[in-house]
Amino acid sequence: MLRTRVLSQTERQPARPVLTASLDLAARLPRLILEARRVSASVHGIHGRRRAGPGETFWQYRPLVAGESASRIDWRRSARDGHLFVREREWEASHTVWLWIDRSASMGFASSLALTSKIDRALVSGFALAETLVEGGERVGHLGLTRPLASRNIIELLAQAIVADRKSAEDDLPPAMPLPRLADAIIITDGLSPSASLAQRIGTLSSSGARGHILLIADPIEETFPFTGQAELFDLEDGLTLRVGDAGSWGEEYRQRLAAHREAIREACRKAGWTLTLHRTDRPASEGVLRVASLIAAARGASGF
Image 1 (cartoon, rainbow, N blue to C red):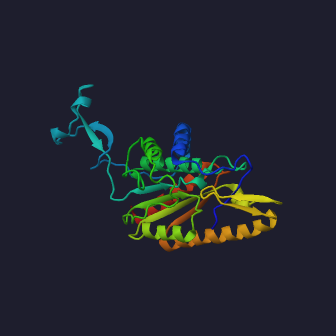
Image 2: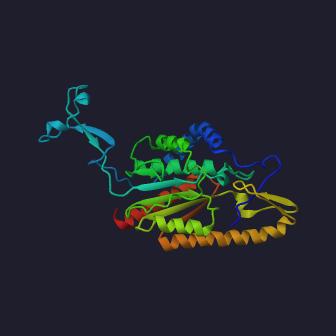
Image 3: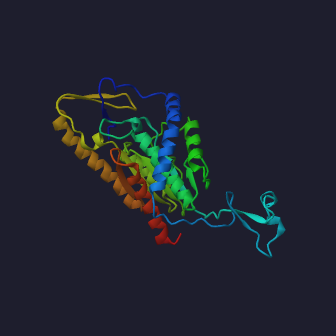
């Protein structure tokens, strides 16, 4: 499928260098982090699995119980008020949630009908899902960038890793790596890479039995193609242009091809046992986040994990 956009004369420009894009992203991150926290706080109904046990991440202090070894006492905390406290760590299950956020050039698009660009919506959604899942007791990592983490600062850690990344910033597909059987994957993308390539990558990620969820981010203009008359289409990633004589007539064929492209992605998800959620950037971010979080919670409940 040709990844094209309809742009005005002032909007038309080649894809930005990765370094410049990273600097722009760094400047927007404080606002995106605040929005992600607001969205996460609005998501309810996720049943947590946070509990004490072996792990790496601090959870809480609790009073020492009679019969426990003195080696478990946190003496610094205990010295504050004369009572003995134990430093507990979080229980970490053998499965985790692996996040991947598409940051390729096509994700930078935002039409006049959208509330925000696709990349900003993808980052807000990914950060909000990460915080929601960590609060529910999960570990979350970004494919190719971080190990699974259960930190309360998960949003900042993910943001730092994304801004520092130069190698994979323009990739439009997640890394080709089979995930553990008990893992979940959340792939946030506009899905404008060839459907066969995306289907192959879904197959690789799920080859060991991992579950997965694709959050497909779309601009409303990409969905409706509401143009008539002369138009010029411009590919943000490859710099290709296409002049369309009658955009109204061409639009019908475009919508048919988009529907076929989406159906191919949906079929790949069905074969792997994954879910597909379409989210438009003229809708609140909380809708997509709540949908994916609910699907993960339902899958965990059904499997007993």
